[in-house]
Image (cartoon, rainbow, N blue to C red; front, side, top):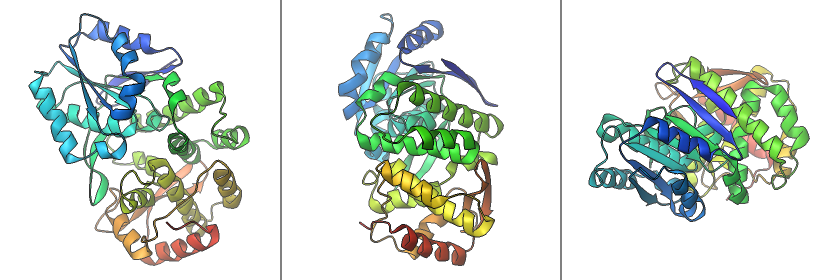
Length: 363
């Protein structure tokens, strides 16, 4: 299955399915880069690196650089070490970086590619459900202790090879993290997709293959449509950050990697739903949605020290905010998002109600 991504700066294919590594081979035979650098992490290298190496045409000179797993990869020191390794191996402006892993590896490797010699090609080979969102759209970057993804660049890949067989090795926490982004796409763009997910997914361990490919494909299509209209997030692309304003604060407050991205975003989305009901009179049964989410294993945790004032400070650093005034993606209805600047008073009022009514665990 092939999905074509069209953006103002670049067009590229996404290949998705159970047997698409041959598309990687064909792409490499067609383009003929000078050298390849595979950036992957400690976990994925043990599981899938050999399959990628076997898909590389024998004529290629390639190198592999292994980084820490998860958000620990998105540090200044790791970013610098990747650049140093690329220089040591003699990569030039016609070389290509292959990002093999989840969203963290994709963000890091893409940022290395975006900044090495002012930009060289790269490809995304996602190995998680979460990466169906992060691998498409060209956002790359690393974290700063004061905020997630605060240092980065827009740099579109040459291709995305989404071999869904890789997903069979995912632990439960990674499945939850990725599924949260699928739910996000449904909430902001497709009420029928949300109905499908709530009707057909009752256990994240037993998702049918055809259901998995359907919602991954639909999520990529939704993101592709938004990115084609707003590549650099000057307008509607901000809708894709639904749930991320509080979600990123939860991640950084807990310590990157302590709470998964998807778990944090799921909590952030429910907060945004409460805000939507309070401010926009959203007609949606949040309670039923919460019960479904909890039945799927989401704990909806907020760090014990994340009191409102601290959360508010983090929200003012969000990239959608201007002049230290938080701007949230809210829903007028399912599939109808808007961006609204909100006062500290209304955010605090709903935050308190949100914690009380959902009886969230505090850790």
